[in-house]
Image 1 (cartoon, rainbow, N blue to C red):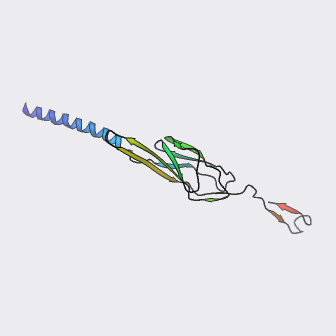
Image 2 (spheres, one colour; image 1 turned 60 degrees about the horizontal axis):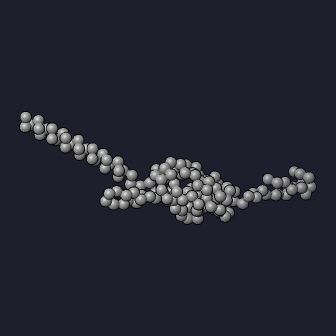
Image 3 (cartoon, rainbow, N blue to C red; image 1 turned 120 degrees about the vertical axis):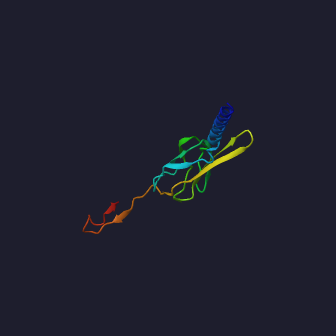
Length: 147
């Protein structure tokens, strides 16, 4: 009888420990926010306010780094499409997005964050046509051809 009581107590104790540790694992399994690129900005683009889509594993506040910014300041869990603020003609290789949030437990607060570098892209002027003079044997004398 004594052995059964000991086995019963050991089984009960192991059930309690396992159930507590599962809750602990679930609560603290998210130690960072993962960001991934969904739709890169087409390059070159003539759009000075291009859209960019990324995915986040958590919701949180968005901050921007490098040469890019946006009026969108909140990310949701899942896909997020942001419109970048007006950009000048040029190449953008230093644009970053950071999503962060603070989670509170009974005893402490933990700041979670994740960063993503936007794939390099180029904004070009809207007039990409070039006029060339063709030799006389290819077109009428002195005519210009637009490519």
